[in-house]
Image 1: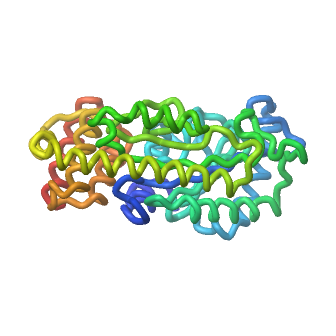
Image 2: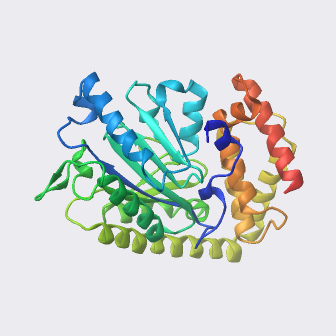
Length: 350
């Protein structure tokens, strides 16, 4: 398996499966771990980073979960490939900054990815389609148990797992869901909803997590603190809060259909018309218009497109994906033209 194989397939989390997949695009659980007796990545020297790299690589190579995986050094990737993996939600933007000691492992179904020497020595996460946090957590937990038979982690009886950032100390577990909340945005309820969950220790970020802005009405929602609670409590707390957000979004969609159907239908069909006829279109406009079409599919206004096709368009129209499809670097204008071509082709056969 290599990066070109990933470019040819649809990741597991894009398949529009699992509970509440109309609102929750994906569920992800991540753990942060560090190799005992070695400084955290940002404090480690070149020799120490290299030794951690070798220790973690050996553990990954013996993992049953990672049997059919890709393991690649970040320095072996060009700029487009690094951005491609970020767009694919397989690694962070921070990890895309090259360093000889950095690597990424991805299993053949794109459910599990492991960043080696990011902020922590090990950042492993699993991601699945729909609202499926418990099963996703079980995958990460089993992987963690497997790796821990080969690696001794920094661990304190008082504080739990020790991590580079204090907010990850304790379990080192972050659960997150990628949600599509267009009705809450359109009805001007989104600010109140996000403020309410933030007060309960939940963070809301953009499409690509920390440091990114919300676009296309997509929000990454995750726990902020991992200390003082068990893994099960963290996942359970997130699930309860997400269920509340799901109910609010469904209620807002019903309100739009009942009270503003003509207006929202007009916005949706205008978005559809633009995407089916545009010859040049930017990433930002694409995400915004696809969000409206997805809402139209979800509430029954558009019936000739499926969400899986829309999920693929959200990803495949991103800059690096377009360049991987074309097999070469493209200028901004060329990307905008190829993006429009791809959208028209997909919508024609959807």
